[in-house]
Image (cartoon, rainbow, N blue to C red):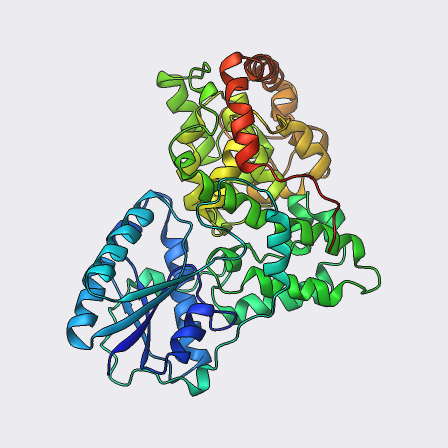
Length: 485
């Protein structure tokens, strides 16, 4: 009997999964397929941490449903589909739409052509509230609420007609299968445990604790990797917000949390509507904006990547990311701001580096946010974060810096954010040598900020930037609406 194939991508769960539900309803043997494609494994945006998280998610699928028919392969997806079609015959292919990178889009075009030529129906379900090919935002907010309030679709996996003779899955690299306690564990089970723990109490003061890397580590939902890899759907999370809306003492947190769930789809929709932003400025008017180049650019980029800029809060955030794959939103914005504004580097020099570090890398959010923080959209508020001030305000006692830059841990609090202010005598007193124990700052923060501010604001007014503003607003800006839960 021909197969119904469910091609898993960034939807590694068994619940609220329309493609799986539709495949089961078709009444034919069902096989779940996940493919680690060569282009994916070699993608500069991805790293071992992502493949480990995906592997853990696949293992969790098997544990949730012991009888599940899941085939995991390392090969080009077309080779996998051709092999299955030759051995079993594929009657239908089910998947979610993927708002991915350029190579995944080209791959999907090839798969669509292959299916068409063989009479195989490929049914793609929307991802969240993202509308494929959308060219405007009229009524988009209304659509978002309709999708998020709709009933979740839970396949009856226990009564599914799973394929019995499943081909042998490929053996995955050992390092992908080894747990690392520094990172969140992938899987639908872990996603729900994390969400339940948020509501159990640690998230009650989310609205006031989300900006500091010290408090955000526990006060934030920590759902971003689970949403990025589809261990839980955005709709499932939103339903818990609605269910908890009248919970005493949680209103401000739930309003802040709900707005960020909305932003999730908003930024992915921007990428879906103009995916060329993977390669170019959203606003071409910034193409000729002067930036640092040559040897200095490479030296500064390397220092930023390695957490060796000599600016404690920048270095602490980068080192935290290197070890854990997580840093809160405010500090992510600061890292991009420092790269593109203070160092005056092209955002494209740093975009894949942070993608490799973010466990929750999601192409749409990543590129749309990166360009917004880099100030090359021409429509968003210019955000130039002072990394010294951010440290003083968000880590006043230097606890976060001490943890990730231990070479500064013994310095007094009044110097930990600006160790270059220590005199030679004070350095001797604290057994600390700037330039030896910790790098001297690669830039003068105040001077670089002034230069960046002048550059950004003057460029924003240039005719070539203003010429594209209306088009960008018409395509990506939603009409302002009053907030509702």
